Length: 234
Length: 295
Ligand SMILES: Nc1ncnc2c1ncn2[C@@H]1O[C@H](COP(=O)(O)OP(=O)(O)O)[C@@H](O)[C@H]1O
Ligand SMILES: [Mg+2]
Image (tube, chains in turn yellow, brown):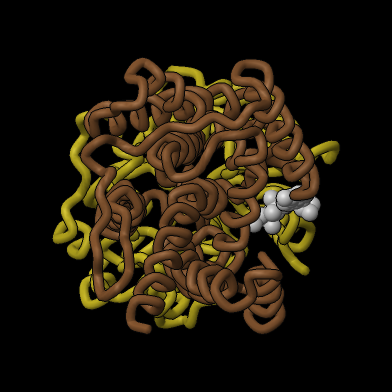
C-alpha cells in the first residue's frame, strides 16, 4: 500500500537519508529502529513533506506523491503523531481531536468522539481539559486520537513510548494494538524501546546514519544478536 | 466642565476608532503570519483615494449608501491588491530575518506613496461626509458631529465582527492553531498557505475599508500613510503584537492619552503619545493584553 523507493532526504546541505526502501502492506505495522540521530524522525517528516527536502519515490495505493504539500499528503491518508506530540495548548482535548479531522479525505467520515474513546479509553475523562493541562502520557493519548480521527491509511508514531512511565507504556501498547486489530490501520512506529516495538509491530527496519541496515521479521532479528550491539546499544 | 470632559472622551474615541480601523488589519496579519507590514498605512491611504475617486461622481452631496459602497469598493480593491502583494512579496519573506521584512515592506510603502503621487497628485483632496451625517448633537455642552459618531461606531462594529470570528467560530480556531503551530496545522491537514493568503487578503481589505470609511474624517494627501502607520504601530505595540482585542483596548487607551495631551499640552503634540509607548515598552514589553497575544 505504501511504497518508498530510493528516498533521500536533506536538511539544507546535510544529506540525512540515503536511498531508503520501505514497503508497508495494508493493515501491517512495522517498527523503525535506530539510535538517536539515525534519521527516524526525518524519514517520517519526509513522507509528509513536512520539513526535510526529499528526493526519490513515494507511492500510496499505487499513486505517487511527488510535490504535494503536507496537508495534501495528510488528506491522502498519512497521519503523523510527532515525537514532541504538539498538542494545541489553548484548545480543549475535544477540539484538538476535531482538528485532526481536517485530514479526512473528501466525503470520508471521521470517527465520532465516542468511537475514539472506545479505542482510547484514557481520553474519555479528558475531553474538556485544555491542551496545556495534560501530563505527558495524556498528551500522547490525545495526539494519537487526533492522528487517527480521520481514519488514515498509515498512522506514523514517532517514539510514542518515550518519556512515559511503565504503566502508561503498557496502556499505550494495548491501545495501539487495539487500533491495529479492530481498525486494521497500517502503522510505522519508530522506537528505541525494543520491547515496546516488538509488542506493537509485525516486522522491523533498522536504520543507522540514514541507511537501512536490516529489514526482516522479529525472528530474523533475534537470530542476529550482533545487530543490537552494533546499531542500538549506546 | 462636563462639556469639556465629554469632548475629551469623544475626541479620544474618534482617534481610537479611526486608529483601530487601520491597526486591525495590521495586527491580524502580524498575529497569524508574523509579518510586520510597514506598508499597511500605504494601502489604507490608497483605499482612501479609491473611495475619493468613486465619490467624486456625486459632487458635494453624497448619500450615505454611496459612501458605504465606496468604502466597500476600496476594501475589495485593496483585498485584490493583497493577493498580488502576498504572491510577489510576503511569500518570499517566509524564511528571512525580520529586518528584511521591515525593509521590504518599507519599500512597498514607498511604492504606495509613488502610486498616489502619480495618480492623484500632491494636492490636498477632501470628501465631505454623507448628507445624512452632517448634523451635530449637543450633549451636556459638548458638540458631537454625527459623522464622528459614525466613525466610532464603524470601529466598534469592525472590532465586534473580528472578535466574534476569531474567538467563536471554527475558522477562528483554525487561525489560532496556525498562529501558534503552523507546522502541526499542516500535519493535521489544514491548508496553511491558503489560510495565510486569506489572512493577507483580509488584512488588506481591512486597510481599504478603513481608508474608505475614514475618507471624510481628514483630508487626503500623500502624508496620510505615515501619520496613520505611526499611530497604528503604537496601538499594535501597546496592545501586544498580534492581538485584535489588545489593539482595541490599546487604541482607546492611546486615544485618551492623545485627547488629554491635545487639551492640556497643545504645544507639544505627540510627546505624551510617544512617552506612553516608550513606558509600555519598558514596563510591559509584551504589551498590555499579552495573554491573548495570538487573537
Ligand atoms: N531541523 C534540522 N536541521 C538540520 N539537521 C537536522 C534537523 N533535524 C534533524 N537533523 C539531523 O538529521 C539527523 C537525523 O535526525 P532525526 O531524524 O531527528 O533522528 P532520529 O529521529 O532517528 O533521532 C541528525 O543528524 C540530526 O542532527
Ligand atoms: Mg526522532
